[in-house]
Image 1: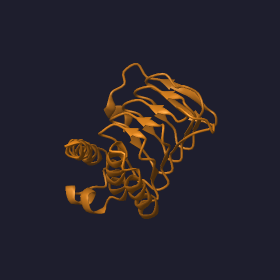
Image 2: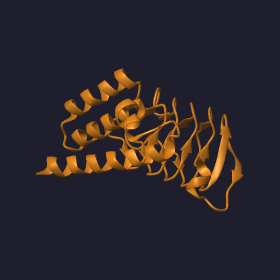
Image 3: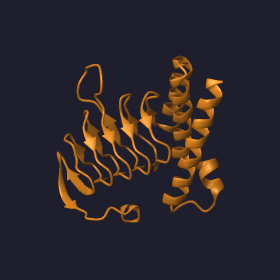
Image 4: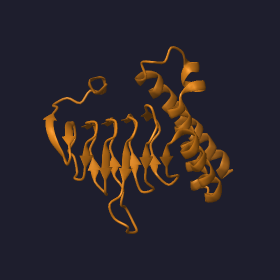
Length: 189
């Protein structure tokens, strides 16, 4: 019975990911473009399946799905990572998300993003990404930092400190360049 509950949750998450992908990818001409040809969506589906098996404690099977996504789509998302339903990874090539990372719904992640660690310790060592966050291409977020809701992280930025809500950060190390009063999702894209 637990398998069916987890499978139902995985399918529900995939549907939410699909709808966000259709909303945020302007290159899609039909739903079939995303379902049949989107490598980033396929990689995210493989993550959802691997996460399901990880929660069921079928870790070997979870790591097989992770390996398929890594080899086939160049996306390395650990099955233990907590990614809320309704995110989109655009051009998923080179995305790395560590095992203690968490990502909120409505988040848009571009290619080459790393949500990584700086310490070889047990416990929380990867970032916590809030909801409705945009992470630009090749950005790196390192350590157990908290990225609040509505944040935009510029391309090639390196974030090593917590970031408050509704602001834009750029650079290496990343610094705040803009604070937004209203954080509408339409402004993010």
